[in-house]
Image (cartoon, rainbow, N blue to C red; front, side, top):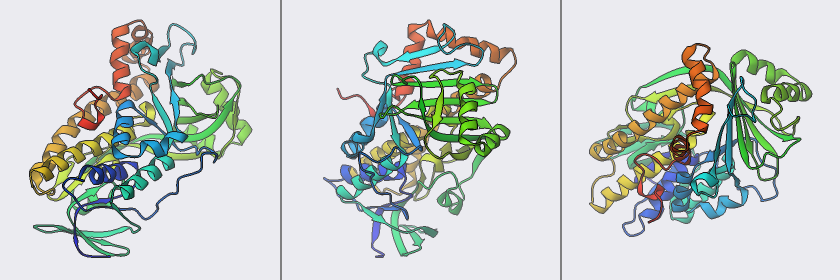
Length: 409
């Protein structure tokens, strides 16, 4: 590896880090920047006929616009599964009842509420976009970094790099965050997300189905081939039993947990799982270092906002860095990075608090406040204005957005 100084080195080539790389590389065409992504495991884009991987994410309208600006949308589009409705209910009421909350894209003049996409497709498409825009990808892992006055020296498993700005996009266990001494509050939900692909007796009808229960939350995410990806955020003891059960036993428990909203289910993939935790970095920036995505914040998956929040981080930081570049400012200057921190930290804090409230009062609460929240699903369903508010949040079109995430005028 060369020791020529990069403008920006992104540690971690997951969807969020790769998105930042693509946005910077494409946005710097008039004032070139040297951009690189450090990613030891670059996935290949699966063929259009390859089976859908159970590990999927939900992409909002704001994220669709960001991916378009990053140059990745044409590559990922063939594997997208749009959904037009969401149906949310508590275990105290039937899924088809006045007590359930239904969001419909048609009610707000939108073609859909978002898309379901495999994580590997999103990552592959964005990394390809980095290269297409003139960025570099280094197949190596991080072993150390040292911050100097004018640049950061980065030691990798394949040599040494230097950059004026290093961005940590390396997940919840961020080595970048730890190396520069950025601290974070972290706690366990004592839940495990169990993910798999299932077939159902009845069509999912391009609808995302979600049931809140006393021991967790179950979501059915509609896929283009008619199957559904499930995300079952179950308390630790239940999750252990689900993972230890046979395929038939798992399907029976799934049928009971879903209240047969889509009829009987059949497991058609392996089960995967990951423990759930919340994380909030105290600061998103230090001299010549910034954090994005899960390196800065981790939220519960029940609202499907984790990747969307990270993509907004990437778009916000890219905008500020490109603006600074146009003014010939140092991309690693703390003043530039603090603007990013102030912008995103408040937006993330609002969403994180809302998601924690949903988990506490709708999934696990038993007191009077929880009963009020559970009844509130039906109340919201009867208010057009409240539904529009929540749909705008789900679409990612509310709040202070970076330019590439806004609707074209």
